[in-house]
Length: 202
Picture 1 (cartoon, one colour):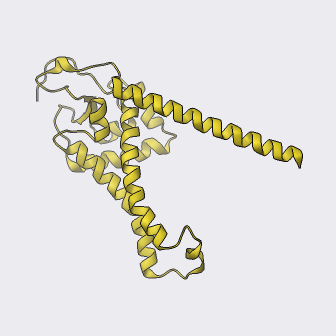
Picture 2 (cartoon, one colour; picture 1 turned 90 degrees about the vertical axis):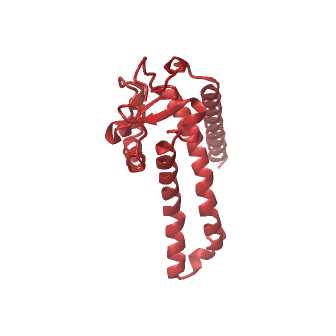
Picture 3 (cartoon, one colour; picture 1 turned 180 degrees about the vertical axis):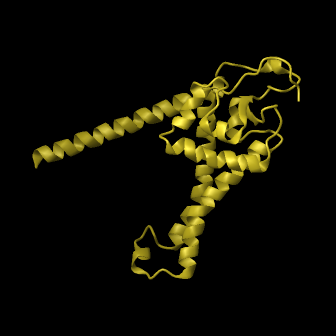
């Protein structure tokens, strides 16, 4: 591990873009687990409500709800402790996860970091937002689990290749998220308008 040069830490917006990419990937994988089970149980057709739950049905539901969590845990822990030290989302925006000295974290530390993100989420995402204000861009789950999020070239023989700017991938993801947010607001406004109109006619 090369120790020389300035360390560029992963800023809030780069980390946000990485989370969006990873959330999309694990979300699709999670649905791939859940949907076949839900369809087989007839949960979308109403058939499930008319049946007495059996041991097999209960087990299937446990797999449907616990499976995606275990998949996410393995995804983040394995990628963060791998040679790349980054999930596909972090690779795309040029970040990686390291120990305090720049080395690879262990799989166990990766598991701990994954569950620590739940704490960051439960407190109204304040744990994530902290990355925008702390000195080393650390979110609450980083502080709990120990790792740092840095530029992909940090702690290498070419620290001069580190970049503080957002980069194309981050900008594209941020724009897409903004457009999606505006679209959701538009749909909500239209729905409220339709409901208000219906109430007025009534």
